[in-house]
Image (cartoon, rainbow, N blue to C red; front, side, top):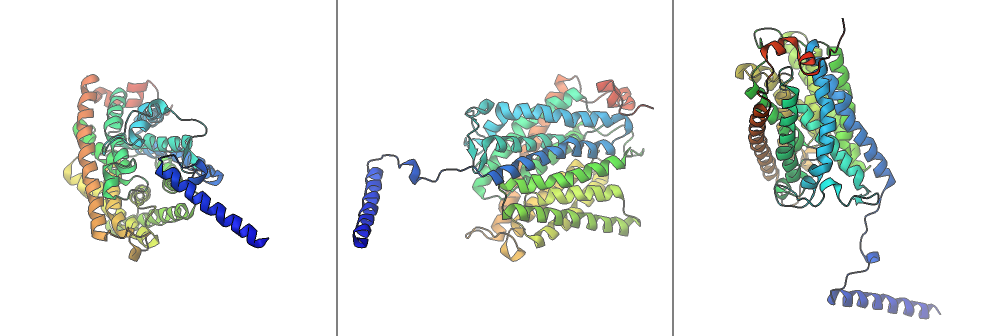
Length: 442
């Protein structure tokens, strides 16, 4: 009897193999049960819903409060309003065409129109082990915060209407293509670039746009001879704290799973940020005799920015290096370089995001290596070739975002009769000039 059952099993296995082989020869599709089918994982889904909320929390209220505290009283509402507007406008742009042109196959630069208005999305649509709807909104929160970062560079002097026009053009022709190049199977992906959570897509991209606009629109009235001080470092520190917490969703969420990579991403995000705070604090202590709270808050954001591209591949040792390097380079960019060049990057968007993003993106090639405690590079890839690929992606992003930003500013300037508010309006403040409201009532 045992022999008979074994003979039956052998015959069935042989017949199944032969049948599948014949089906393949005849060009017939292999049955669904023979293919690997994507399966929803409730743990991954729960984590990604949480991560999405954390990233939105970074903009509202985190970044809004961080920036709001750094401007003067007469402009606090304008900054809060610009961040709020980005949440609304970018949500609509992302679902209408942004997601389609970013995430579909297309070519090396841009996707296609096959998913306009989220065509084909249903409650059963999956992206890996999570619902596609969750993937869409998680990436939407990135599309919201990236333009919101830029507003800090021209704070206190750009018309609200000009901000909206500039951001619409920049999102369409810079953010979406760079997203596709890095994460949509485009140019950067073809080069083997490692950008886990947005070193080029978010930070270099936004930082370069910030530098371009702050130069083109000109410095604030009185800068740099007259002191322009933050009106509330309390709000800034609260906003910094929210950004720090929210960044765990930003980095660990980019794994799209509740697994060991996500856990490591959280750990090294904390290590890099803490290292940047301590190093910046020590630099100020040595140079000025006292560490500033503003400096520590800025350092925290610099450490968060720099570890972003490396958060899925670096280890603790790499996080220490990236955190320390971000503090040094961002400190120099936000102080010495800005003063010597004379541009008024109001809230140091380029100095922190542009420089920090570039430092992190390039060091990702080193810190991903096994001898640095990282996840390791592909077999045929050396540290040198990986760093070169990382550097190429940074250069392309700088040029791409820079060109788009110049064009977008010219268009915004022309359509609004001048992107900059009048001298009288700047003296009065954007809260009243643009919104006829006041952040504080005496």
